[in-house]
Image 1 (tube, rainbow, N blue to C red):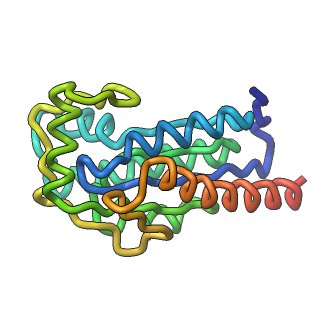
Image 2 (image 1 turned 30 degrees about the horizontal axis):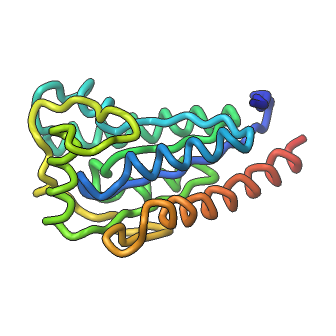
Length: 194
């Protein structure tokens, strides 16, 4: 695996994959991570649930805490992309304007929204929580099941995938195409800053 130097003017990129619990975020991010690593592109995965658990342990985050979670995730992604890293953000957006805020701070950023009917999402979420199906990685433990009742879809997604209509491989391939465009843009910026 090649490691990019974190030089002056280094540019990385970030893709935030969001959607209701059970829409397929972790599956898509895991598949995308494996494909990128297979190409020699080191990638960092940030899980929104980890930030949420640290900021609002054991409970449903308040509006103020959701804003803090959003800022923390975006700031971590910004620092990593500024150091030349590729970043995948796995998790529902804690704040409706997350994509807009991320675009203001991260040069090479894209937001992917996974859309899926609520009933199917709930069935998938339960299956993973109760270990009835294989999951690419164990989900970050939560105090209670997340039914996605308060979920607001992203208002400005660069790509929306309907995971009830396309398979996981097709969805991952679409996100990979978007990541490829961001990688090319980051490479161009690195060359122009060199």
